[in-house]
Length: 142
Image (tube, rainbow, N blue to C red; front, top):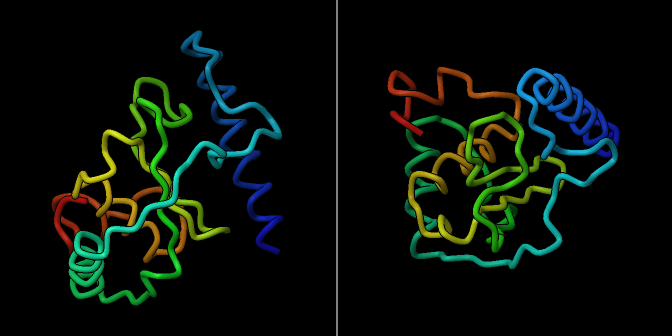
């Protein structure tokens, strides 16, 4: 079932990218069938940094999760795959594999890590529900 959801997500992202590409003229998007994960990612885990952020998010969101079930990677890139034209993507969470990929320059950026951790606690990538993301969200700006 999770493989099926992964295919649906990739299809939807690819379709949105194609439409956006036609509208913007940009062609550097996810190709149909291309993996959204990054084979050049390097696994890392900074307990001293990650644990307090995770605990804070669990507390303010009232969501629970296991930090050690999430695998973190940094990627030696300036940006991750373009999902939305004009937006520099610094991190992405993949719910089917519980992996977070962050560009190398942001691997210690608390705001980027916090944002992706919230996706992990929500166990999805479906947008940014206002209850959890944004200035009026239960956890403030993430």
